[in-house]
Image 1 (cartoon, rainbow, N blue to C red):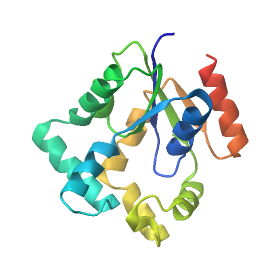
Image 2 (image 1 turned 60 degrees about the horizontal axis):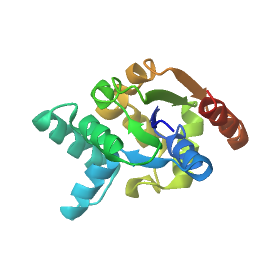
Image 3 (image 1 turned 180 degrees about the vertical axis):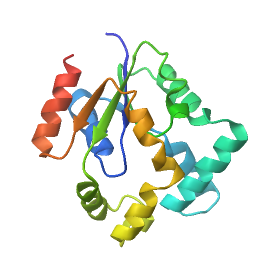
Image 4 (image 1 turned 120 degrees about the vertical axis):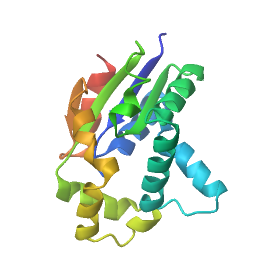
Length: 181
């Protein structure tokens, strides 16, 4: 079986993790996240993995070592993995797909949902330390952050967009359709 690499792009709370988790559970996908190397470094520095710290760390390392730094890491990890299905999550910038888009195995999928739905999901999931009591105003401010402002440009490059404003079952059906393509 040929290797297949599916990258997910979408704004915070759109459902990227839900998609990759489903593909792992049903199809045995291996998950790589752009945030993992950043979180690893923050942990080694004994700094909390807050959204603010991740944004700052991403900005500083990309400015220092190149906008495609994490794309190169993801491409290398995906290439070296023995797995036949790999998902790459948290793609946010054009630089994030620079090393991936020319790989014949790579497909970019956009996940979208209205802001109010995404905000509600963030409050429930509490994925990052600073999401526990996030206000709508804080959510809107993060939507304007540099890391978020480039997402629509990358979403426009996707081969398919999944509207994730419906049920979990509807999302799974759409993912199954993509897997059978």
